[in-house]
Length: 524
Image (tube, rainbow, N blue to C red; front, side, top):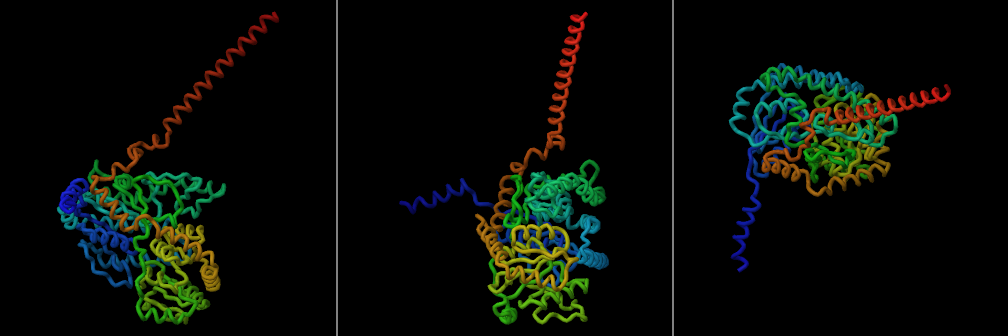
């Protein structure tokens, strides 16, 4: 009898709780390096769970130098910039690298980079054939890379609702209404922790007051693109497009980030690329075995940086490695190593490394990194201490958090000297507090209720099935700024207090007048 009821029960279950149907999802990726790696992983997760996925990819050449491309299981629509521009862009990127290695990571350099993104965006939005094709496909949802403003403009031009995936920390928090108490939520680029003294809180407050000016300056870079591709009356602002996102997903985990208040339409799903390690090649195993009990360290300075353009900086790093007992596996393009520098005896150069697998090896002792979030989360996931050399973007802020939680430390690039570098490596490897701290955070990262791929899939399907993320957005998105900050209420209360104070003073003045008048009459 029980077996006869099973089909009916199953049918009732399907009627009450229908299984999610496959949806058509567009992913948009207009930047290379770690940004592309994350969007590729997102696309694969959605594809592997039954959704029809296509990526709109802008290729500016050499997105992952040294890496052999994997065959994509999902469809891709690619647009490539012309060869002349690619050469010019690489030359500019190379010059900015030199500035970063000299410690000149300025706002002007970042604005120059945004200008390049604006130019690329203008060219990409002119690809009429691709846009017409994507419009005809009628996608249910887009998942866009949220750092590059062009991703928002492309989604808006296609008329597709979108989820924004931000590859870094909360650097754009103010644009989407994530307000945090300035007493313990540090502003981006402040280099502050959540434990600020008076002068730290003062600095944080001043940076907060200046942030709208900086944000406005950055958004203005794309205004010409907006004017050219959107008609008068329907021209969006970058801030409007940020607020329009159905959901914001940040590549963040509180094993690294400082705790802070968030909105319901903001989800933290960090560590998509951190996974259980696979065995490394026999060639690498043989090299690692030579290290004995000393073990080895992994050196990667970002997926986009395959070599260092400053020979003096490279020489200091190389000489520093020569002073330590560990073996060193360094991701560096061998053909670009300067001939006048002899590779240290304990260093092995590789055009590309499987960083996650090396960090999961039992003999790994340390990660030397630029401080990108993907690298940091892989290191924390595998419980590996960190020495950072932050170069640009969010990397300095990320390393401030690593140092604050005693999982490692960092050296500013303009302070790179062989002896200091070697001493820092020895300190982090030999001082047990770094290993203990990173193992504690590793447990936090690994023991989340749901792994990041399931979180991502669940939220994407929730937004599709619920018809958008309107139920998650605060009403503040519809309020004018003076209402959000209660300026109208403050003005009303201030006016009332002023009127009442004026009336009280008026009454007191009248009473004093009558008192003195009566006294004079009595005296007369």
